[in-house]
Image 1 (cartoon, helix red, strand yellow):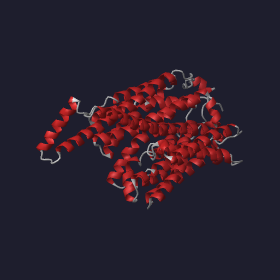
Image 2 (cartoon, one colour):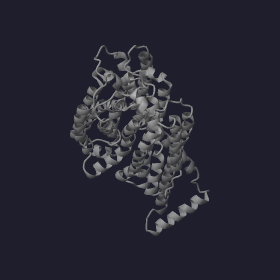
Image 3 (spheres, one colour):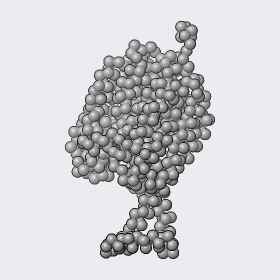
Image 4 (cartoon, one colour):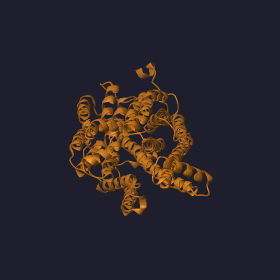
Length: 523
């Protein structure tokens, strides 16, 4: 069956299938961000340092990144439904084990297992949903998967903060258990594999390709996650893992391209619409995860918000996405994908540019509005990019294509967080250095401010008024340099997405999937 032909008829309502498989994938994507705000609580509970506790995040991301590109191959070996159910079951059991962990090493091991199990849920969800709907409803199908891919990372910190502040960090893992069991039951009852997705069995294993891909992707994820923390290439740890990543990934590409039936089908990138759509979804992850990391850091470090309030700044943006997804899903059948993608990039660029004009006096409501402006463009990117990516992919390759597509989005998120945090810290140092140059006795403004603070503090009876005044000025300097650095970083995202809006216009045209007329359907 060609990609242009209708999907196989299904006995079960496709919307019901989409809802069931999306619940499982939503649960997994949520776990990529839900622990972010709970690390301090986890560290204290398990008698470890804050730096050590970050391996709770890293271990999950590394395992997830390794399995994602291999999930299409695993689905071919086991059968798509079997692999999906196995992933749900293992993820649910690992989540329960994480909640029961009594030490940090134990938690890290269970998070590794959780990441390995969850890596197959995103691509299998997308592949199952795509096969459940006919081509003219692909926009609707991807609107459903968009709730999982776009909203879950945004709601993760909010939900994690609410659970941790009001109950226990263990419940961020325990809540997966009933959800996973229900998803497992309904997937077993409702989902059926079409012929091209049934188990083919294990003929042979490309051990070399498998090892190179796993080591390369795992090492790269560690570098991206730990690079800023360890000051990048001043750390031997980062240098060694960078070398491993480069050698394994470059060697893996050459090796895999020579295989007749590779575990990762890199030849799919030869399809221009798929390759360019993967590029765009990479930057969807870049903007989504980068913005979702920067804004909570900003409001917590500079405006005194707690974890729950910082998460609530993000949540309305998720609600805006949910509202827009169905509308954009319908638009994909009427408007060329490249125009929608260009508009989405322009919208994100405008939102990031507006955010860069923040002031120290900005309030909660304004932050919420700014976050909404940052996210309204995401549905215009995700759905058209997904539609374009799979427009010319034959059904028998849909699982491997979904695996690569999901990998590109996750890599975009990892690169986005790493690059943007590094950009922020560098600019913070530059801004602070520039401002310190003006703190000299020859500067009238500095002299007047210092004299005012000294007099005020001395009037309050402080014995070391001059020293305290200097400390207060330095605190203001740090705060202002940080806000300016955040502003620079949001402008950087705005510039990148603005450039990509023009790149999107160069993407190929794809056939619009219109609903067939009754006469055509009869034939």
